[in-house]
Length: 637
Image 1: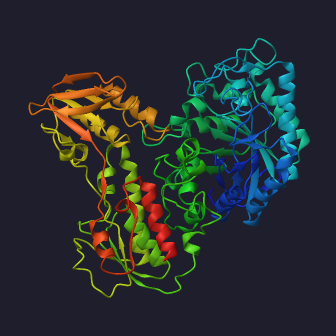
Image 2: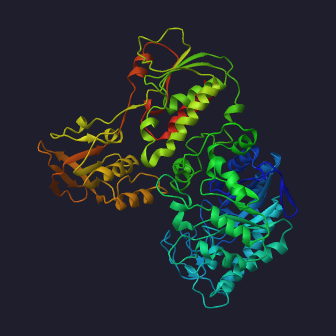
Image 3: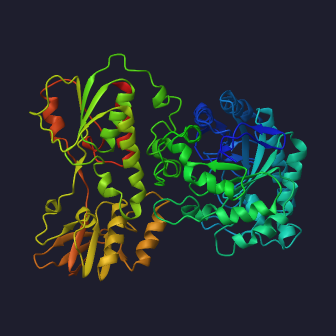
């Protein structure tokens, strides 16, 4: 079996076996999907996904609510949902809508109401104790699934998928952790599955298309069901036309959406177990499905392969795999796909570090389809980091004659240092950016340091991508010696008792700390926040904190490093109370902040026209801004 063979689910013919799984976007306004959502899902269909599942977060009942959810139970949502279905159909793909009730894994803040759940068992991801559903609630929510499914059918969706994964009252009914009922909906597997089976049956009777079940194969929570329960779990369920495999709960999303900080559960063996337990099509995936996983998933017995974050990184992945072409790879960073939604960045919609088009599909066509430059120019790019490389390849693809000069002996800029330890997946960014530069025909000149005087006058445009300077420990004006965290990552030897001052607040504190616990006798991390690296993306933060603690590091929160005396004594000041304390470690390491390396740009700007800058040369920011700056300038030049 291959990814590009046609498949079927009941009577539904699917053009290939690549699936874009349901993903949260926040492209919702007053419970109705926006045109941005249609464009987002349509782009994945245009990129080759034969089956699109979504949108995510479609609710079946007003007792579950929130600003990011589609009120699929409301007839007023049908017209907008129809535009979503049309966008996928216009690309030649099919779409199945995923329905959910969040149960006790949300809050009632939006509607000021209690959350309904099987029992009054709170989720570790929510602070509210839910209301245990009475018989009227059970009937009402069950009817809500039916009403929402009918609305999807009226909107032109090809089928319905019921969510029994994270954010799901259906999974909570199945769970011994969340379901402590003593009536017919609790107890053993048969009782706990009763509500799910009733919903499946009613939806199946009310709609003509296939009805799928999106099921967590294990909850990964203490007291929840486990992978060993898969045979009993699936034996208790009936009435669904395909099985979509997922894992975990809302409280375990740092592992179910594992990124740089935590090891993801391998789902191949659990999926094999599930395949053996059912005689219907199975959609399988890994926590991050890559091209390398496709054959392994088929070998495990799945009929369809599900992708999520990888199709955010490159919506044409399925097409590229079929044609044997290169595609940009997901970095597992969770910076924009999850943090953009949960952290409400840029209005709270889905984005991607390596793909500026994700979340902006209405405004930005695929870079391969962008209009050729009306007036091709000779362009010099100074700096071979991510911003410079992204600009260079995109500008060359649009027809400009681009030369890139890099002072070092290889491309990559600060990615060469960043892609170490837990951030090793960032090496994919360097590799993919370099490959794009080669494919676009950019002239690359390494070991070519550029000054304002050395730039020839006949360039039509100069793009400065010189990045940022390293933090300067001397800027703290300490009397004693301190070591910059980047020097530690670059190989500086550190031993004895180490104090690490986190003045960066991002992931470098963890990256440095994890290196230090391997070499030092003790490591104390001092931070002005609750934890070190507090601005690290929420999906990654718990895993990094746990890893540092497991390595023996201790934390001193709400303190700043006020002074370092000539004898190495460190003075700490409590940022809340003002109280001071001292300690004398063997070594003090400071994770500071970088500054824009803007001197070349400022000098050139005063000498000539057609000078631009991108990425950290504008201001030091996260990796996504380098991609965005570079590509946006290339699209406009």
